[in-house]
Length: 167
Image (cartoon, rainbow, N blue to C red; front, side, top):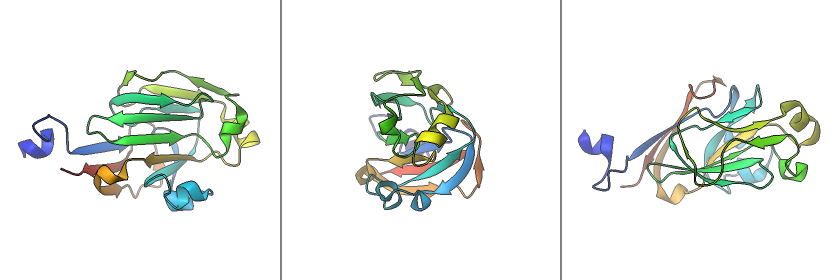
């Protein structure tokens, strides 16, 4: 029990719980209308069709990267899990229009803390899709991914994934 809760000698947890980074409709990663995500080229995960324009941290961790166009953010959890939150599809072409970052690389964040605010109506108008993929980018370090069966999610409250890291 102790090892399961607290991980190895380095005190790294072996499991990471990932909560919804935004409220909305939960969809399978395979249903994202972009092969980079649906074919899991970047890693496995889940996606949300957003109901609003506030992205919060889905876990406690560190901001590794905020893309210059602010359409995506990379996080690293306490377990070493690496997570990409990508706001919309083909939003990089918006060049940051309608996006505002609340954090920067190196910031420590808590679950539920605001990461990025964006204009959802503008994204729906200018992007290929407003869907938000949430992708584990270091699948080589992951043993198992358990995904929710919920159809809707509330930001910071709904557990989307439980991820067990390799020991």
